[in-house]
Length: 471
Image 1 (cartoon, one colour):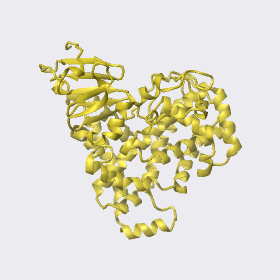
Image 2 (tube, helix red, strand yellow):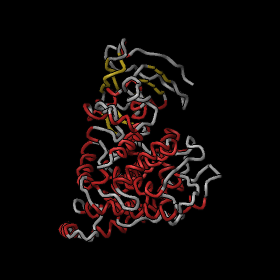
Image 3 (cartoon, helix red, strand yellow):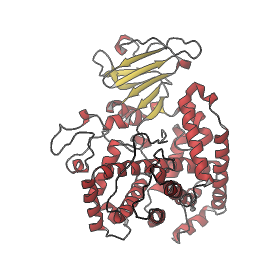
Image 4 (tube, helix red, strand yellow):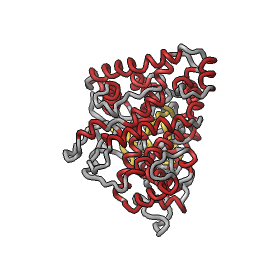
């Protein structure tokens, strides 16, 4: 291990960190600086620098995500490492290429389509059929993600049938056809997608040792994914843009998200890459939020009863909610907001300094001055730590419970300051699918709670895995 040293950022006349000590082979020389708001770790492996921060001024976020947006991005190394999986999609690129992706995709997510709710409701109804209501145990992580449980008390028959709900809904929303994994645990696409994502995350964590990661299942999974997606792209491109406009204007329910994108680009690879990018984001973020929400509701039966009563009063015991219903249940909105406050869908994220630049906090004798950031430094920022920081909240009182208490009621009197609550990122890269993701979560929650008078958790939630990726 390398020697640990401290270094005062204010000691450099240039304002930039000192050179990283050379390393021999894979032996890491590094320096670590612990500040209230910023930890600087200088690795000697291939000269890579990392800065870990949860300071709202840095995360801002003003700097990384907003006011110095052009100074930070994904970088060419990120694109290289993720290109096999995500191609040149919106989550892997910077600059003009990223801007073109966002311009292409954003109009498809600002539309409010009744059909979207119909898609989500159809798959929730499949869940209800599998959850027969006779008190059987169900692994929520298996239900939403498709992971196998480590708890032998969970009914594995139900788990094997009721899996990958969010993947089914996402593929039907994007392509017009579900992969059908709710009723088929052996769905090739579902297994392939999970394998590719799992191995991709291992590669990222392995860093310079990623050449040691076995890749056979990765390449096989990509082939299966692309073979499934290609016919849908081919079908969409058989229509001219004018024909797609006419098809959409007839409102027959035959148009899909893919058709909407095909009106603006005829490039097969561009369409494929954007589908995979949105599929990655749409599956994991929704599944994670739902899983944590059910975990908290099961631990707080009083909150569950209050929320269920609001749903029954507004929607009834058997009806599916409309878009207007979704907006008219404030306690339900508070429950989801509180879940995302404690458990943001992407708890950690990364950016790369695209040039020599700065962060607002972490330097100088008072540790509150700007810090120099050299080009190619990796910035790891933590929305989870930011949103759980007690300094960002009022003093504990009856109307302001402790920061780690799950309390939807706090939202009745508390409004986050700008950049204090960033579950969907912020700045120009703020999530373009917020409204659709929110509607998806609310619809499933409402329909499940209509039929379930009570829920409870058995087993250990702490050791369940997630594959949410940095986006």
